[in-house]
Image 1 (cartoon, rainbow, N blue to C red):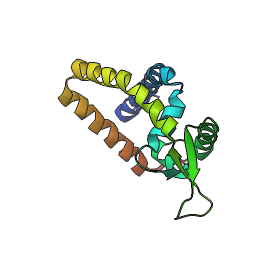
Image 2: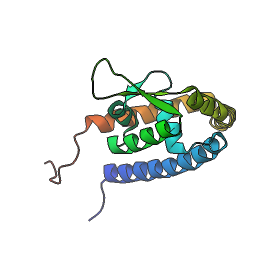
Image 3: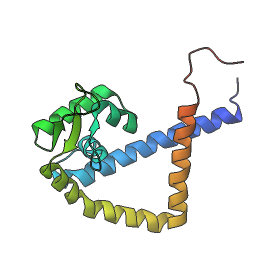
Image 4: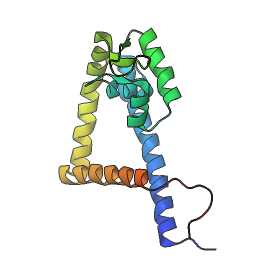
Length: 155
């Protein structure tokens, strides 16, 4: 049985996304290391830099499990890089926010992050770079709009 053109495109898209994920994780680990962070720690602190969020909100924004975020958030709190704050909207779901030490760690990442962004911009061109972001965001929205497979093909 041969694959439809849509199946081929889906497979190529998924494989490209998996490869990109691996590349971004490797780069993120390198960028985060001098700040004493891991890529996962950076991701969670980064999610709450502009506003505190509950763990479930961070998980939704990042598309990962609440349990994964909870484990990292607890670690960040233990390390003094983040803290839990009361949540006026929900008594039991505390808000996670960075501490001064967490913000300082993120500042240490900025030079490498800036240099990588400039090199990617130069390689792709700023217009193509912006279009890449738009296409990836559109793909993410489309995946959210498509119901997850239930194991039974639709007619």
